[in-house]
Length: 344
Image (tube, rainbow, N blue to C red; front, side):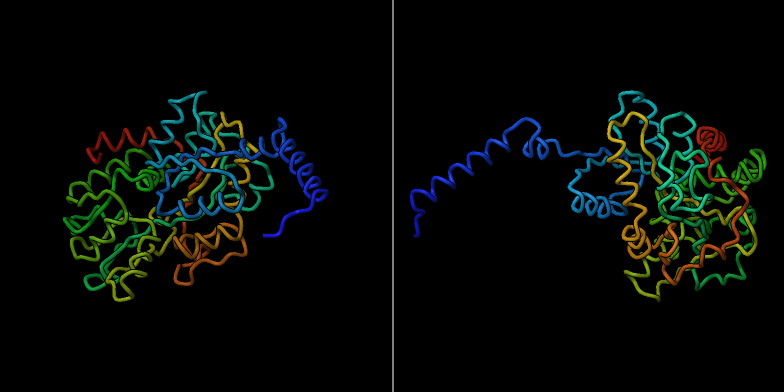
């Protein structure tokens, strides 16, 4: 093995000593590395849906992520209960209603205009407190061997008809369903929504834990139709092929059943890392992340220039109801109604 000469070794020793001194100096590189930021994220989106994207963010930026997964509404309630002691930096929700509830309670911090303007106004907070990162359309998943689109009602209200008795599935504990019921209250009023819930309940719908279970049940022939978000179908088509006997149905008019909600994010007001949290939200709105939503989760990208999966009905062709996503925050009233009707 080749050895350094005396003079060269002395120079290396001096350089090495200086390097060690710099690394050990308070506030030097070692301190910076030891203090690398870690974001605490409360995610109402499942680990399966968003975990790989958060990991990608961490790997590309060196910013650590500590994620607490749970139901969207439960995590929003947790942040409210934790008050000024909440460790959460970023809240990611699967619907605008929960984001609106935190915004209404003053628990979200205003986002920079540079982030907000990446998304069109209807998919972000009018007060700049949250922003949508992907779009999710409510649809009717139906069994294609039992029903043609022409056999389905032309309005969500039609599922109150007794002919759907025992043929339908829903997931009342799911955050997306609850946000949809909130939209119905805004569009129809509470009493009409109550009557619809009671009429559908009288038709003995099967109750499922989530959208995945509903689409699986439609495919297995347990039920003929189910109220779900659009993208769950495409996971089944990826796994089981085009022969899987389920397709999505959009109502033909500007119907209450055609709600397009968003998954979105906001910065919790108690966060001490706003600049780092903004980097995460900027990443979620980047072309790279938007392509992930289009390609991996089959959701609608919300940033212009990133196309959705070509199999999806384009957003501008869905005849959405005239409901402002900023007004979906009245979740407690919706939960009360669901309990009063026995749906929950």
